[in-house]
Image (cartoon, rainbow, N blue to C red; front, side, top):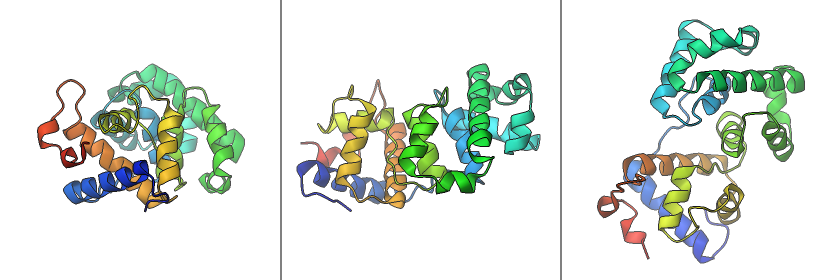
Length: 221
């Protein structure tokens, strides 16, 4: 799993093994289609997954979780349907921007989108108003099976507590740590990030972390 024999690579290897042993496989991202993952990646910005699930359920209930239907849906109607995800007016606009991008650049075809070179596609996604690095990489990894590591607040918090990065480190710096030290593998990146999220939700709380019972406690140097 580890590409280098450096200390950082070995530490990441041990973290992964410990998390997998403790939590088991996460089967993330929960969705019925790649398009649903893309919608969810935008909806999950600044909210928790339960709220995203409610918003997705709302779209499914109204039989609207399809690109052409959502593209043609009035923004005010879309905002109302995704209200459970919070910041619904902003997210409706961001979703509309993404739908327009998908239709304009790939004629609405996820297959054509998947065939694009990963770095080129990443830059295109980042050019869409409302899509940042974490959202773009979530789409690439979880919807399109592209080998890129997703970094979030949980990742930075966990790594900083193990002395691998500073919690204020830039996204690209943290991502580079994984990309340079781990095997370039979609399944691995998927599982590792999902396990970090699981750890973050259950142990690495911002205000009152449960360090005493954390499965990574034996690895703290």
